[in-house]
Length: 122
Image (cartoon, rainbow, N blue to C red; front, side, top):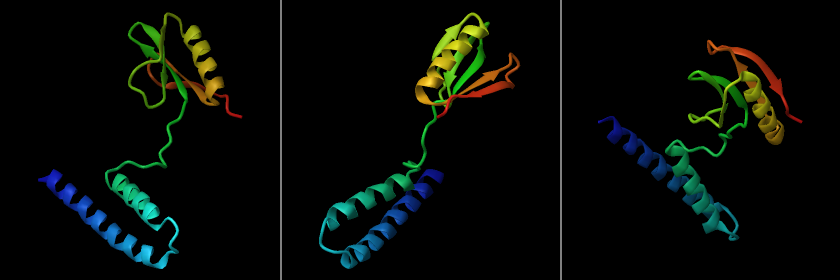
């Protein structure tokens, strides 16, 4: 039932946006009106589905405990970037990546808490 209600609300939002777009198209000059209307409609559909272009991923690198070793993981990723036997080598790898992408290095303790944060942003 919940899926049906969410689909219904999405279609209602699309229908309302299509109506608003029709009003805007009449008020706009004749240049690129159809292309602009289509682009806005696609953006509305994606926004209604939960896809936002405003959400930007970061390149922050986390040094985290991984099994009996240490790993570097990009913020937001489930998979690790690299695995290391020592925390110091994992930190060095994270620093290289952070410098390349103007990001931060977040070093975690073995318990999972944050120990330190270093910024390599311009």
